[in-house]
Image 1 (tube, rainbow, N blue to C red):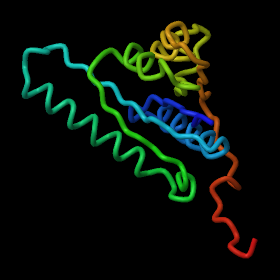
Image 2 (image 1 turned 90 degrees about the vertical axis):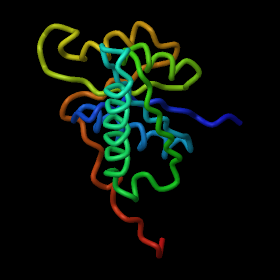
Image 3 (image 1 turned 45 degrees about the vertical axis):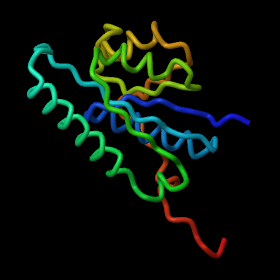
Image 4 (image 1 turned 90 degrees about the horizontal axis):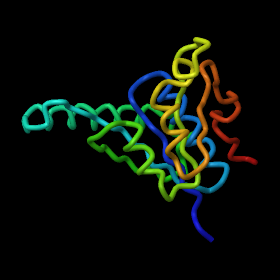
Amino acid sequence: MTNFRIVVGVDGSEGGRRALRWAVHEAAGRGGTVQAVAAWRWDETDDDVIGSAAREVTSAMLDREVGALPTIQREGVAIAREVVEGRPADVLAAAAADADLLVLGSHGTSRLMHTVLGSVSEECIGKANCPVVVVPVGHELPHADLAVPDPAG
């Protein structure tokens, strides 16, 4: 039996946090794994010092976001972290090429689709080879899911 693999885009925003929580919750329910992916991009690609600093900042952000998950929520869920240079939609679509699910956060509430979903979400929907879940603004997991289980059963 193959392991259900979820790729989630994490960018340090509230939408990214919602997506990460949703992905971990879904993986826990399916006995799956999560690959948290953060993309960084620096237009001055010939400047290795600035590019290296951008990568370090992005990596620290990803560690902080994964580390902020309640222990009980991530218990039993393997969460891999990956920081990749490139356009976020391209990076996420590539990371999810053989995934079972791609999870993203939404941004804004405008009537225009690219503002409702966010331009990265909209692009990923068109590029991904797997189903894409866009976790909406205001979505929160039920509080009971984060409660400490009763050891007495």
